[in-house]
Length: 242
Picture 1 (tube, one colour):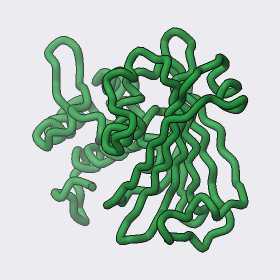
Picture 2: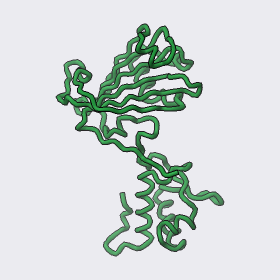
Picture 3: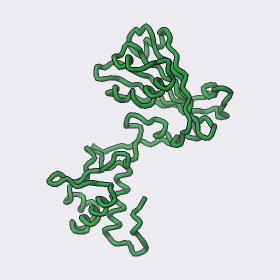
């Protein structure tokens, strides 16, 4: 949201405030969440350093940035940055599914298959498989099929047959153990994935996001396959110039 001090005769420093805030939300300042130094930032904004400093002070007052003496200006909260699929975690949110008020998770342990051996690039005797359905106001907006091998060290911390434990691992904790996350995306004709206790989706075209996670030893530790009706999808990918 733009600074509420703005009006028809917006002062120059408020205009700069709003431009910097927009850049923050778009993820322009991604290197250690640090803004460019004042000389460079003033040049980018086309203003004097005095005008820039007024803008920076307002950003500090509003809790958006903090000034570290002798180091520079830093973002106070990473959540102010609009994230895209190039960052790990929160797949559905970054695909446009922001409102979820219910998640069902059905975990099951099973013996490995040739498909699992291929995915994990090794033989794993037992795997965790789970179906997660994401709802808002009783409408199912997305489905995720997840498989996790049981030969990884962290698996002992979870009761894999407990739906809450499995959901927490798949939705949140798994990213703590992943070093690299790879994505594959495609449009598929598929409606059966949205059948859950009598709940069906009318859409025949779904956006498929395949999320493959690899740990710091190069071992595949999870594969998630998200199905989202195409009418709900709004993908963001932030590209940064090197």
